[in-house]
Length: 206
Image 1 (spheres, rainbow, N blue to C red):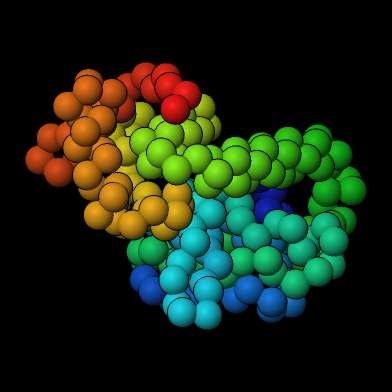
Image 2 (image 1 turned 180 degrees about the horizontal axis):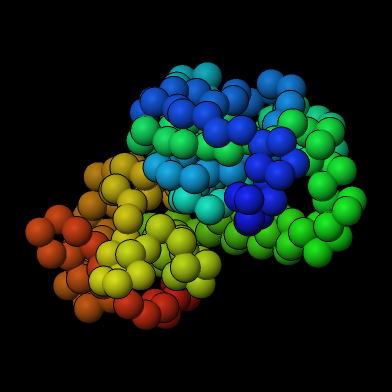
């Protein structure tokens, strides 16, 4: 999102995070702007029974946990390192001053947050559909449109079946069975357990 050299010039610092470590928790007060340098982070809510709802798998170059930076509320979700990570973080008041002096970045964040909200509306709408294929297709099409969680060279979907289940509200067994059927219909390719999808998939109303 923001050039690392610009963040460093404003006093940002690097922080190493181990796989499985919590970066911040839902309900916690926000003190920093976070941007991922390496590794992956899952952005989630966890219900009373310990079940996860994954909102996004954050990749290098992406920011996360931005809402409290703008409304001064607590974090609406938790961020947990999916792998060993390096973050760059900037103290919240300094980040706000950075945006004030770089209004182009403020517009960039407006577009980013709008896209994320638009995706959440799409996910909520798909939950009303009892067809698991439609839920999975909506997710894949969104990720393709955002060029996110896909390998640019080989079009491999870089999500596990469990992560897809957490992101669509489906059981992992349902995801496995549905994606196998999608493979048989030619909507995607499964090879050696890996999923590949080059083009958008048409959503068939049911």
